[in-house]
Image (tube, rainbow, N blue to C red; front, side, top):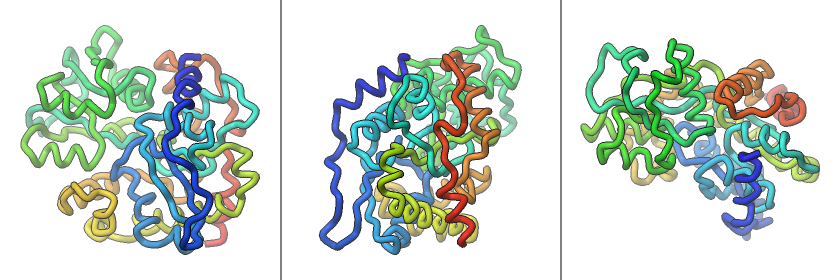
Length: 329
């Protein structure tokens, strides 16, 4: 219930006013993203390459800064679509709602964070973390729960773990740079830029070690999907084209289209970031969430002690949009 309370509490804050249509005759979609990362490259590619415009859409991307805030913006109507982990929809389903937020497209299929050490460790092993202080995100968040799951899979017990949950997700890198902890998880391009500055070294991919998990997807209220079927399908078609682009083009070419969304990042760090995410096979090519992956996600949440009950796959996931549009390609 703590998760639902946080979501409903955050719903009192409007992130951005919702606009229905732009002066250029494009329909605006407000998509509240959980964080801004190269991990979500296909979303930004769909914008930069004009795929959304081809579907008559123009997107706005407020940053929620966490799954609870993203879900709050969806529930309140401040956002048409939330882009965050499916766990937010699970928690809402458990709490009860008359208008269930539904995952209608799933983008990332594994954790997008990389483990950064203060020193070079070319022979790094997960067992090297025993007794060390780790910054991995807030307790109960999927980044933290996935990391805890990886530790347990590598033979750690609770007494072996020295995890610092006291630093907010968006403050972890700064805190690590100031001397907190021995290791810190970072998304791209932050991890590559941190390494390029000589402040730390990437030693492992959490996603590669953690396996396939439905990590970040697009979520909308059932009423919105029913009312705006054409917008949902247009959005899906644009995203399918963008994912295909990531599969068929080199990292440097992909990076060249992301500079507008990451103006402070160098083209070198963007290229490295894309290469790192391509290497670990980060994205679902058809945007459909497999039920077995959903079950594994609930296993991870349950293992962390954050799941009060299981939720049926069909209650929070609807793959019909991506299945039907993918078949038309």
